[in-house]
Length: 281
Length: 248
Image 1 (tube, rainbow over the protein chains, first blue to last red):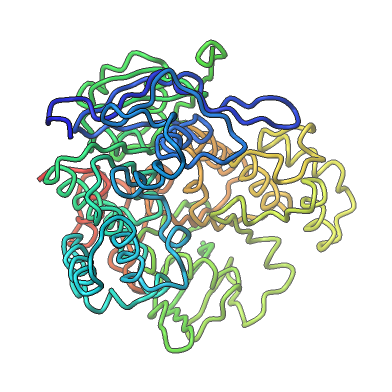
Image 2: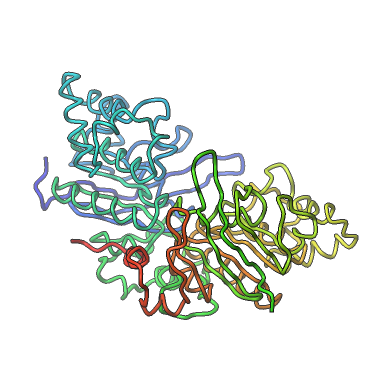
């Protein structure tokens, strides 16, 4: 394990290409960053490659896609050179991922408790009884009030916020070092959103994890993360500290910040993004 | 002046679940009225009840002075049209934009379909190039523009908007909100708009109602909300939540 200040994840010149009938679609075009034990936000619109970046790190890129990088290393271990079996052991154990919508990303025919236990027992040799205890403790850690009841419920029986907490519990149970959260709160109500973010924030800092927070909501990311990467058309257009978001230089970042309606600021019509071809160059 | 929409004691019941528990509201003609609240607060159900998509258990709905019965007639849908949340789900996947826009015209027996389709597409900023495309060939923002065009093609006076931009990127959201404001100004439309985003509601609406678990919490003007002059804790919580994450 690396020390608290060291680099956890190194990404250098990551590319994800999808061969299609009409030619190569370059979803990610040379993304580089490094991550310590901190909260890094990746922001961009749909199609900017932010989710594909997360998935490539996780190793969940669709099989037809081509992933290449000068370096993609977790704690010094090259992820791309690794055999699939090892990568699979890493996934869920050292790298975990929270997806957007608990309605679609939890198994609908398995109780929440069983799904959490399954994750744990895949990665650690523990008895059924102990796995259950740990799953219950984890459900409690994500502030589910009645863990024993929720343990036996199926995903369709819980609310979106509760489902998302269950997913966080499932992802944290094996004690990962790197957490990738792909739009973890976009499907939730604003008030529930903050609860879930609060839980995520506390657990990440308590356990000293690195967090990659992928979102289209620049303002939310800025209030949650330490550092923000802004992506456009598969490339990083700007990297900055979250606290310095106001001083963003790139017109795309400024445009994204600007185009959202804000309580107390009357602007009719809202400024819209004037996309420049050179941004994608 | 008769209000565009007047609702009195509206209740909607699904089996034993009371989705709306006696909600009353009044929207003046030409106004833009917002409904905010969490999921499950009944705000979308209210819109659907007006559109006749869910049956009302009790209460009355009056639109442009006419009290509605259990069934809506054709004339009603010429006055009231709805735009749904999910542009991926609300357009027929196997119909071209042209076919989609022809349907309401055929139902209402319009003869000048050709010009109307062209005008509707121009109005939402799509132009003729999009006319013979399928929904899957369009981006989310373009789809929502088609949905708005379909709603506008019958020249209604009232638009029911159910989270029209929540499935869109922030930059595209701005474009669609601008478009909605523009058509409202040009056609003097009445909007009844649902959103969970207070910023969007204060941007688009002059008055709003906060809802929680099927009931009205409070009625506010946008400026009251902007000035934080709210009386209920629930609204205050929503306001706080809309300011983003604060580390404790």
